[in-house]
Amino acid sequence: MALAFRSDAYIDGKWRASAKRFPVYNPATQEVIAHVPDLGAAETEEAIAAAHAAFPLWAAKPAKERAAILRKWYDLMMADLDRLSRLISLEGGKPVAEAKGEAAYGASFIEWFAEESKRAYGRVIPTTTDTRRYVTLKQPIGVCASVTPWNFPMAMITRKAGPAIAAGCTIVLKPPHQTPLTALALAELAEQAGLPPGVFNVVTTENASAVGKVMCESELVRHFSFTGSTEVGKKLGAACIGSTVKKVSLELGGNAPLIVFADADLDLAVKGTIMSKFRNAGQTCVCANRILVEDSIYDAFAKKLSEAVAKLKVGPGDQDGVEIGPLIDQKAIEKVERMVAEALASGATALTGGKKHAAGAQFYTPTVLADVTREMRVNTEEIFGPVAPLIRFKTEDEAVAIANDTPFGLAAYFFTKDIHRAWRVAERIESGMVSINDGIFSNEVIPFGGVKQSGLGREGGVEGLDEYLEPKFVNFGGFN
Image (cartoon, rainbow, N blue to C red; front, side, top):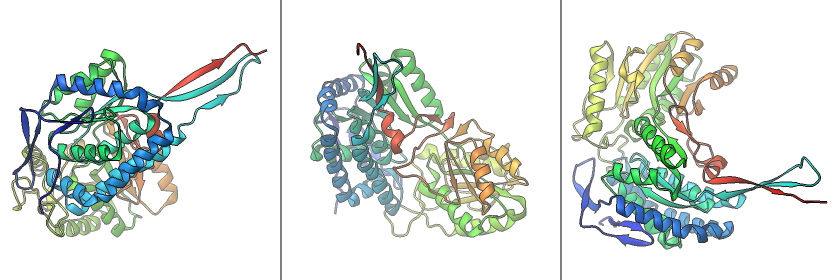
């Protein structure tokens, strides 16, 4: 059965076609699967105007009513999980089973924030004088603009749209040009759920700079959210602050360490490393980018990990049992090839992999590199591919120093059986999120975000709703 999906943009409750369109490719085969509208500055301004017009009525709607619509949107997502997962796999490349996990994960943010919308509490502040009474309110910030990445084409949208819409805001979304179809499927389900026109708008484009410029500089946009590279995020954040001083949320690059101490359960550490490093073929911002292993267990761990990695099945995401899909595009595969070649030339050894895979032009063989040093680019830069570089350390202090020797601080992992070490290291690592003895931690109830150059703000949890609410202080004076 052919996979049904929308291929027009969605603005002000209407499906918007365009004479100018761009292709969407299947990264496993490089085949064109759709052509979607290539919109620009004018259409972005139109979408922002629609969101601005829809905002007063949506913000005034009781939170319980907004929650009911969001809950219906969530139910429609869960009922449509099979189609959504196949669509995520088709345009993004990840295995269908993994894509199904993302679809459920993405839907969970809509459910969570539907519930949290009813708990956007203000507070009463004890007065400083008997003639005044103090209260604070939490009010929706206004029109929000969001730019999302291709590696989680559903979850990165719902993690922003869910809290924004739940808070009473309206939103204009620019999905990535590589994976716009999932965003349009979400718009289709939002329409069915009863979201009013203008509340959720999707502007598809291949001209990201033109659309981003309008979003950053528009006086109607009060909040801007971006997930992507630190380099681009810095520029967009500066444009937002320099033009209209709008609120900014940035989820940027990472360089996550995964530390294996000598007292760790090695089998658990190997399992956790594979879960973290090789999910979505290593194309996640929180995946373990460098594996730090204590010297006394280095050889044993390297052997167990390389044997397990060598068994990972590579292929198109729609094939049964596939665990590693393609990289997103040719540029991505070329970057991984360069980084591995540089490491090998500098003395690293490929215990398994170390080359492209025969499955297709954008497939890379899952790789474990031994004898990696701190100076190599596979340690200092985000790889975004299925490559696990192993680095030796001798002491806890050395491990923490290597882990923190980066301008980034998004996620970190470590494995140990020592509860005292667990507390010590968790407190010392400079990272917004730390996972102990577990390779995957993301869910809707936690605050997701980083420190240092990994970003600003948090998504998910109770903190995620606050990103889209402004606290307002009210003074009642004149009491007798």
